[in-house]
Amino acid sequence: MTGFESKVLKCGAKQRSGVGLTVKTVVSGGLVLKEVTISATPSRTFRALTEPSQLNGWFTHAAEVDLRVGGRYSNGDHDQGKFLEVLQNKRLRFTWDNPRHAKGSVVEILLTGRKGKTLATLLHYGFHRRSDLEHYGSGTSGWDWALDNLKAHLEGRRVTQYETWLSRTRA
Image (cartoon, rainbow, N blue to C red; front, side):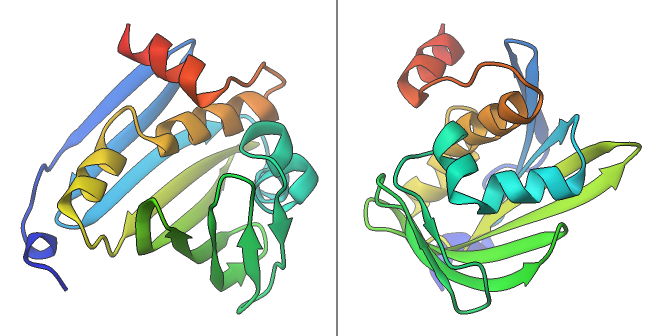
């Protein structure tokens, strides 16, 4: 454990809205929490997060998924890791082992159904570098883009490439 994990960098919530989409972010200690409400059921959302054909439509390319505890995932963006927990339609927990971005950290995605919609909560923790924590906690991180795209994909709207999304977000 590094020293910054025991300190609060920011505490509180901020929301970023763009193109009608909103991601809520909270950073406390060494934890980044992001939430978005999606007009889709938890089962549809879970499939979008775990089926390679769907992942390739909104998040990445060349996705491979062995969806079981101990199974591995990878994609053409160098994201890779191992599933630590898989609860169908409710929870995914996996290592995040992209050699360029927060290697060795852990991501959890919780899905909570609410009146035909899903609250998707993403937690990312176990950062080894302060710069990774600060980046993933920002409103311009890949997670904000990914959650915006997940929402757009499931709600039948157009998804965007990260660079396009980032330029709109910073404008």
